[in-house]
Each structure stands twice: as C-alpha cells, then as structure tokens.
Image (tube, rainbow, N blue to C red; front, side, top):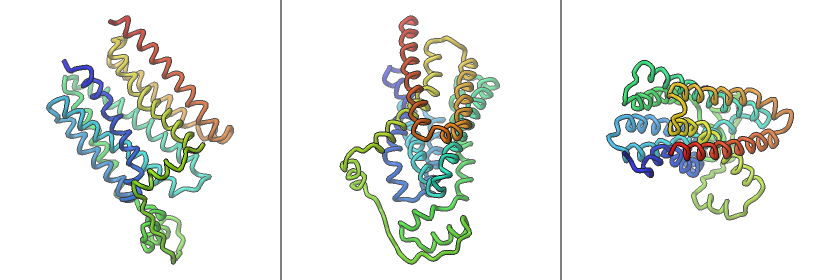
Length: 296
C-alpha cells in the first residue's frame, strides 16, 4: 500500500505540472512561437501519456504525470495567445465560449470512453488503457494542429515580415507590405520586472479569476470522483454518471455565457459565478471531511 504522500502526489501530479506549465508557458510561447508550442505541447502529452501507461512503479507514474501536466498548463497559455491574436475584441466573448465548449465536450467524451473501457474490459489495468486512449485522441489533435498558421503578430515581433504578410494574405485576404521591423523577445528578466513594477487591478482580477476557474476545473470536476471513491458512497459507474452531469452542466454554462456576458458585462458574469462556485467548493470540502471522519 503506497504512503499517503505518494498517493496524493499520484492524484495531484498533473495539477502540479499544470501550474508550472502555466507559469513558464507564456515565456516559451513568446520565445518559440504559438504554432510550435501548440505542437510541442501535444507531443509531450502523447509521449508521457504512453509512458504513464507502461510505467512500472508509482514514482515513475508521478514523474510522468507531472511532465504531462506541464504540457496541459502550457497549452492553456499558448492556446489563448493564439486565439486572441487572430480575433478582434468584439469576437473574444464568442470565441472564448468556444474554448469552454471544447473543454466540456472533450471531458464528456473522456467520461464516455472510460465507461466503455470499464464495461467491456473491466480489469485491474484499465487505467493503462485510459492513458493510451488519451494519447490517441491527442494524436488526432496534433495532426490537426500541423495545419495551423503562425500568428502575424508573433511573426512581426520576430522580424519575419515576409511570413507575416503571407499569413495576413491567406487569413484576411489583405495584400499589405510591412516596412518596419520591431523585434521583441521577452526574457525571464522581463517577466520578473513586470511583476516588480507593481500589482494593479488587472493583475489581481486575472489571477483571482484564473485561480477560481482552476479550482472549479481541477478541483470540483476531477477530485469529486476521488472523494466519492474514498467515501465508497457510489459504485464506479454511478460516479462516472455524476462526472457526466458535472461536465454537461459546464457545457450548458458555456452555451449561455455569451448571452449573460452581453447582458451583465464580462466582469459581473465572471466574478459572481466564480465566487459562487468557490463557495460551493468550500462546502463540498466540509462535506468530504465530515464523511471521511464518519468513514474512519
């Protein structure tokens, strides 16, 4: 039986890696480019998903999960950079919702995949098949990402004006000539200087909102399964059904979010629901503690 620390790290390994990936993902995205990072993130995910599936001990499992989590966290930073550099401010509310749609739909597909594997295989190594299937889905995404073009903004800041002109022509149909060159390569020192310059309202809003979203996505949606398994309240198939309801509710929220944002504004439609979700997470934590005490 593994120790409590190793068991906790095995569950939280992807979260730990995602935090590190989110911190350094922006820098790597600026340094390597949006398209390259989108491809590299998927390559890392695929490789380490397979390594997890063939891991021989818990230490390997944890290490591979952390590295795979790094690609997930970095991919969020890269993905939003890519999206926002191609769309206008008026389109951002709509396209941000598409990101939420994709997350919820993929999560529902994952729940269905786990259910089918559990139903038709139902062995002690089913978790290995789950990671292999994750690698298969990621491979499909990798192939699709190879058809993407780099963003004109990154090409311009990298001094690649000719390439930027071609992308603008292909995407927007505008035949323009870029005469000036403005190279911009942010270093880690620049990132440190940015935070040292002072904490403003935008930074507080961004970090608080993303922390709440992280707690919702990684805490509620993921750890609720672990909690129910520990408490032995439901069977595994019932727990998958609960996960399906959670992600279905998330998909419904993504569908109505553009209408809510247009009616109440981005700030209210982000802060109020996120604060309410944070309160629910705290209540869930209390319930888990009480149930765990009764179980002991």
